[in-house]
View 1 (cartoon, helix red, strand yellow):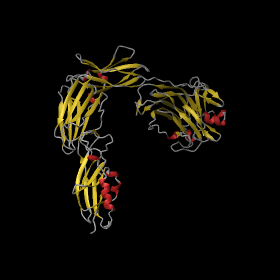
View 2 (spheres, rainbow, N blue to C red):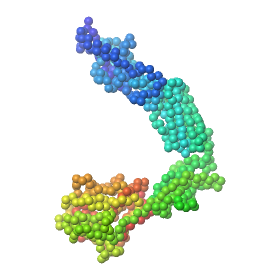
View 3 (cartoon, helix red, strand yellow):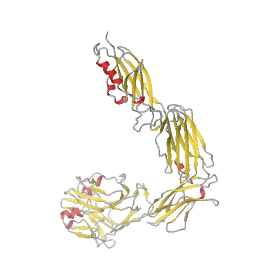
View 4 (tube, one colour):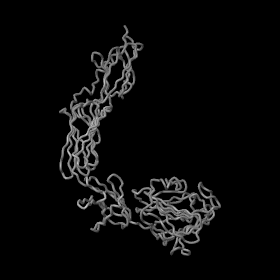
Length: 606
């Protein structure tokens, strides 16, 4: 009679669906190759789970979600086996099986879960299926975690009191390796992975060494251990005056057991000062009370500071302190000397108990001055005038584009003494240069070259690491009526007054910009978002479209986008025609500038 077989197909891994179907229409009575092939192929496979691995730790290359699957007939003979169900090519096609009852079992490949290991969950499961002749049969194999998960966390507040600690988790099974969770004074656990153990009672032993080299032990034993349990162990400081202890919460739904082990400590006052944010003439101090007695009076807290070169402490009284959180305090210390070393501390003194925090050293920033800020120094090289002493390159102008191309009379930015505010002043005179309108400009940085007749490439910014509060100086502007170029979006209409512009930016890098498309990687200067670009630490600007009869002072506050990021470069750009990048403006606009300087103090923060 004709032999009947069925086809078994594996579809998934953790929830494995199996399909068996008759193939009597495809296998002839004399066709023995399929049966022989299946028997021979299966008989040569050896499951990694058959190896004797009792008590060993998980192998280094153990992958718990690599699933081995085995199919056995009613006599216990293995008719199909794979050590990697997800990647076994045979399971991508049909498997021939004779009619009958089969047991399908699966488990994590490469290890039997009988030992311990970090990141080593072990999954297992089994089911049965009845394969009938000429009938479609289905089975679902579900694998679940068969071992126990343990995670340990050390509270960061242990840091001020303990230099090190270890939590050793041990199984009652003698040949299972213990797992060690270690804590250091830098905080957190040095082992952040979860450990897994076979199902058996567990013991948690903690050894802690204080900063004074006293060692203490605390242990906890868990006996009613079941598969899929998750034991979360949190070691924390007990409240001041408390004897400590262990509290347990249980979530029966998720089988999570939370053990909070409170370590007792001596009732005392402990203060901590932190690294301040130091500017040129002020610093933001911060500190905290880490522990306190029951009689602690926070009104007795003060900050103290002094120069590193001095010995006498100055006191900032309690009323000047700001509470920034639970037992956290801050204060802005003003009136400091630039580029000077200081020391500060938090102090508690209630008349009978005096405690000082650690002492924090810091150095105020330098107040870096602008070079040639009065525009007294000018030199000429070839046809071009430069606003620096010869050999220096702090300031640049648009002269290299206008005069460099069209000749000496097209130096649009020059030094003048007639009508100057003080000695020599800078004069920025917009002009029509034969074929295009040229706005006069002066800026910190360098002129890198022309882009044909379409524009120029510039390096914006000079090295600078100080943090001023504002840019000030003197100016006099003649606002001409706009008569040149094509109006760009957002600009004033032709016939309206031109606008001058002065802006200052503190940057984290020098900017490579151009006012025309180029192939050298320079970004368009008109595309920089001064309010949101992450390279901008602080920014301030002034624009004006009215004419000044006399010289006047100006002040441009810098708005800081961050008080923690320090600049590497400083940019000042001044232009007699704000829309000069678009070759649009008035050829009668003129801006006079003199005596630039920075002011220092508490900044405007966005």
